[in-house]
Length: 403
Image (cartoon, rainbow, N blue to C red; front, side):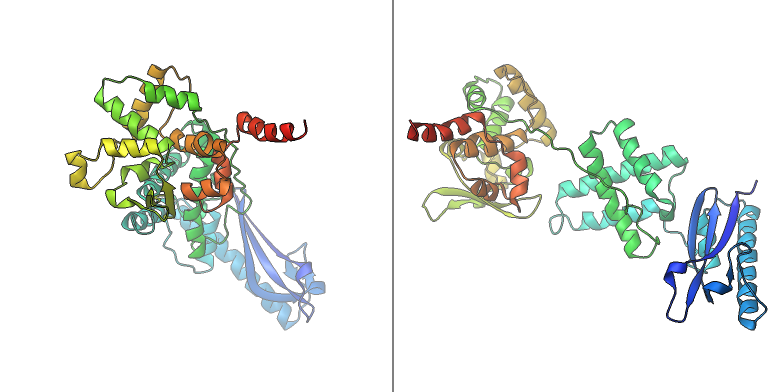
């Protein structure tokens, strides 16, 4: 059975040129989806009959226009019949492309995505971090699974991606994949880059993300208090793996280093600063920005503890960091032993540095931002919370002044 097809020739009265003429457009609608374009003919507004969709009168210009529109109409129906005859799946965009003699080679969505991911993989360590490449791989897998579930196909033409596809993908991520709101939005944002590539290369006519607005929700980030940090430090651990993870976690609580940065931290990243004290001077894996951090006494003690480790010497590394998965699993085990009822992850150490170790002790947020390697202060404000105790201490000075 043929898909429902309708044609409409029309003019836009608001777009009249200086000669009093305006373009004639053709709108093709197939099963509720439509495309429209100029037929490269102009006509005076008062010569156009919107009811018959033809030029009025018997002048040579009117006859020429009407003949052109008749040819276009016949071509559209002929193109549809050819698709039906060949038993091919087709869209309104396919009809338009054949009619306008565009390249018949369809660019496929997941092929474009894979080409992009291959380029990112080849630039790991130069323009992209390994974590970024991994996120794009995961995003492509989610999109592929959605296409298979929704369209029962392994791939679709990139022209088929519209606003409905995007909102459907977002719903799929939140329901089928059980992604939290922010995770779903971040995946959609990754996917948006692929569509922008397609648009920039003229593989699609318009950006389907034009009316999509993805807003991240503000998440309350957890952190450890001074008392909880001390409980972990004083915890007696007889299992070596837990003892090592505890050391690295505490080290990050007092340096603010993220997992990827502490894992690659080498001995050359530790040097004396202008103040003759030791500093960690490294580039962040995530953003490639410089991060310079004075080494506090407890962090220095942990470095000293592992300085004679032969395996670390061979690799020129500072600390014996395990996989991120193991670090997260073991830190939860440590939290349980310490009686801390928080959802501890390794990244929580970075939050703790921003909040409890620095800001609460009067370090200005500009300095904290610089140590964390952030490119703008707004990012730091997501990590940093001024505790009631800090506010109380600040106001105590004022209270004493007014006594």
